[in-house]
Image 1 (cartoon, helix red, strand yellow):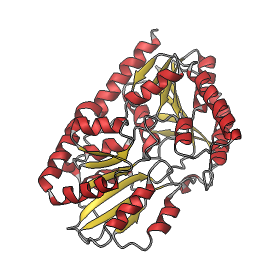
Image 2 (tube, rainbow, N blue to C red; image 1 turned 180 degrees about the vertical axis):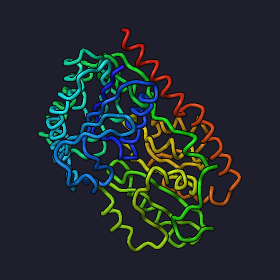
Image 3 (tube, helix red, strand yellow; image 1 turned 30 degrees about the vertical axis):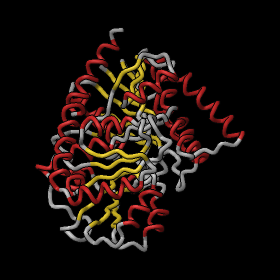
Length: 407
């Protein structure tokens, strides 16, 4: 088959959506399909065009591991406010229309959301080539923007919300198949669109994230301390207020160290708030080749989410956290699907965002009870390998793609 993929994030970005889109495309190449990608210049997670691409022109064609990649150099704001994000989205969308002309044939077009406007671009390719349109939702970006407080609640923003939601529904209803990454998000999708849906979770390559291949960790200061790790995007969706309070609570406990690895819109602000603390160490994102060692070096993974973000987000980082055979402590809304995953797997602890005492007590408990911690870690890895392995998820996806072409 000839397959076209549309989405702003792609390799060499090696985290979040860019990583998954590239692994999906390269899996399809291995299955002897022809794959082309319409994408932007790499900029995530630091919200800045990557240095090797800065001096390149507005349009660029590459071949990455057999995948034909067509890029447009999109506007990237230094401080991504809602309005600047909107300009970022519109610029990528309009600039990519020229690249659409370079797609000569497509049996399937896969539009990856965010951005929702990728659906529009995918539909243009679908009209041009006669191919079926598959929309894959990694995040309901408009819901997440409102729920996280990125957009206020004034009259003009309420009017914009109504407009954006109507546009989203209209675009989703143009798809032949719509997939998303969690059961909670599938329920939300059903409230928005009548298009045929499919559960297509993110995956983890258990052969690459495994304690057996982890090297000695180099993060933190004291090798014997209990390492509490957060690795990922430092953005508006996470609950950094709780994170700061937890770091402060343990500031005099020399047996606990916090390690923060990542980049994002909130990093500079967070660094400023944490600069006086001696129990936390902040590092830039690691390359994917180092991710296994980073995840496996930790004694505990933490992910603090805001209470008002429920089913719009199923953090992909949770898969790597659990595959590392290390327990996870996650906060958020108790209705979240992450709560169901951690409860079902017995691979970690999920607490309400407001349960600060529960958070610090859990850290202390797991630090003092190594047997409990190890059991949780083993449960976590077994659960993830059974349900979210790279080969299982993508083989099932491939079968669904082939079925769609015959409908």
